[in-house]
Length: 263
Ligand SMILES: [Zn+2]
Ligand SMILES: [Zn+2]
Image (cartoon, rainbow, N blue to C red; front, side):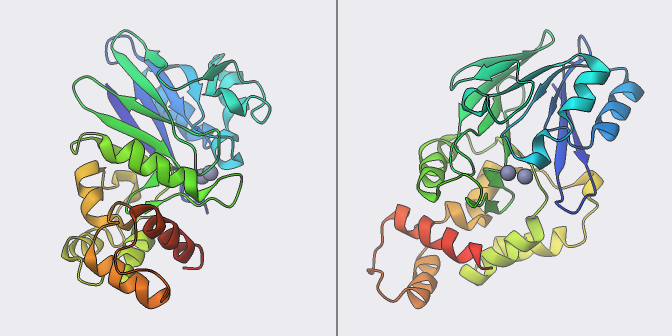
């Protein structure tokens, strides 16, 4: 599997992706907002975009569909529940579906509500496990729930699905928010040495060659996976004095999400 991460350099800091079968050159474009860059890279490399996959229905993820379909005739795939909100949707996806790219790439569909209620993540099996997670999981952060989502479902997705994937899974999110997210982690957990070191490493990073984290690393530096950390809980109790000594993981997650909304 070839993964090309495409930095859009726009105000929303989107990442687009091409996932390519090295044997056939067929490619799937994930959220190809910057259709010029996506089509340009495919042309340069000799790849043929046959499918467009939207992780969810927000404009900064579907805005390039029309141009890519016009140029390539690609089919558009997204969560079945997004059919009324994504014009030209060809294939509605459900949990457990397998999206094939060319001869050698298979991507498992995860139904991952929270950021919106019609959000999918894609999990590649095979030589390298990788998760294409849209606006559900970011490097050192979690998606917001302001535009059609629910924090409770986002917690279920994190705890029930994402946290259970193998630690070596590569993480490919829909935006670059790593610096701001690490600053939030450190605000919540000032003694997190791994987050401190990583922030130094990625400050002003070349976003055309951005750091690709693993799930194991996220568990160390992403506050939304650190729901049992004594310092996270102690700091949270300063902000919410009514919390018990030993709040459950869901409560910690929801309170962190609430604080992040105003961060
Ligand atoms: Zn979104
Ligand atoms: Zn987005």
